[in-house]
Length: 354
Ligand SMILES: [Zn+2]
Image (cartoon, rainbow, N blue to C red; front, side, top):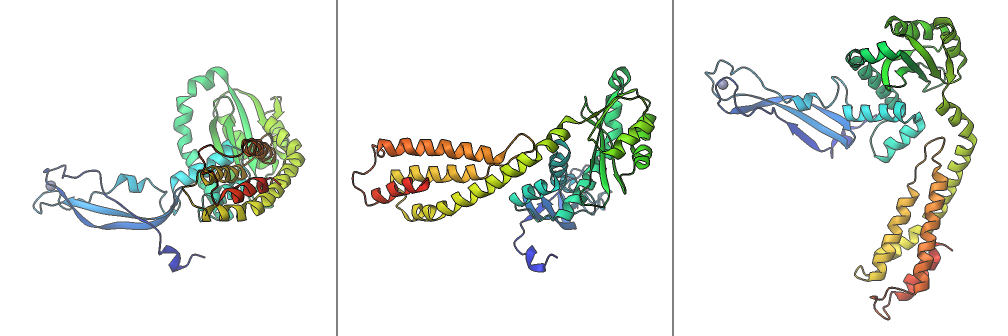
């Protein structure tokens, strides 16, 4: 539940029409009143949006009563929604193009410090599908000639965000990466998949050459019923993700351990660096290492092949090699000969990896 005080420090943004003069008589437009205002969560954070209405400043103008508004403000978020189109599209992209799970999306959203709950992410995925659906007829029309000549290879992707709740399904043309259908089904029963997804695709009238999906039993049955004889292949990304799951989980555990260990060692060192004189070149070098380490700790993975733990391990090793080389050289030539900091900086170097 959001409290009134949460709105205190939200930045305000005012929008006015792009027109500055009256299209009828050419007199300048004058600010009238705020047409609407609302809080919108965008990718940059939460902002308070004001749409300000303008009208002709000449009272005798025949269009003096016409209120001009900002098109840009209207295009920020869907009507009645407090989430920006940019956020909706980003979440949809993470889900359906990068195949991120709900947990991964929640982590990505948290990393941007956006006030969006897991439940809201689900709603936003639904909104994203509605947007896809709205744009679908025009896109299909643009590819009609291709579809007629080559037929369709369709991919069917279902997502059950929470056990026992509705499923979100997306049907795409695999070669064009074109979304053909986006539907929410209240069950993943085979007859429902047939009726709501496959039959409408058949009704488009193109030859369906093959189907790709995960190995779900209901989808297999639905394809057999609606598209008898159509080649149906299990999606390789899904298979690899499933097969790689134990490795991915083990890697994630390793990443968590590594992060915890390094962070615990890094904290007192960063504090020491902050308190050291900033014009000391040795401090500058160590600060760079400190930042490189922090950056390495942010490594993120993507199932099945991008293993964040291994990426982190590699980066840590590179940093260690670089630090050891630095230690061997015995300092930086331009460094003051016997500054007060010297011993502590040296100790820092050796402490970082011991
Ligand atoms: Zn006018």
